[in-house]
Image (cartoon, rainbow, N blue to C red; front, top):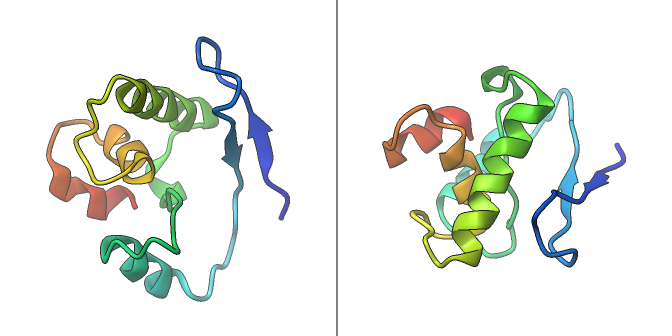
Length: 100
């Protein structure tokens, strides 16, 4: 699987976003556990594709997370979990478990 590099409008050019879609991930529970444990070696937004409407949905959440990051307003531990948080329809941090 090749990651697609995306530059979002109105964001600094050095803040590139990489988007990839994987199917039949065999170690998904391990990856999810590492993210929830805050393991710094697993710094990415691991998103359950069943919870996403479209690529635009993910990019909108990414834009919001980057904007919050640039303005020092993160509600979660890092930019990656903030993307997952931004996918939630409400502000309940516990819902990260549903989308991630």
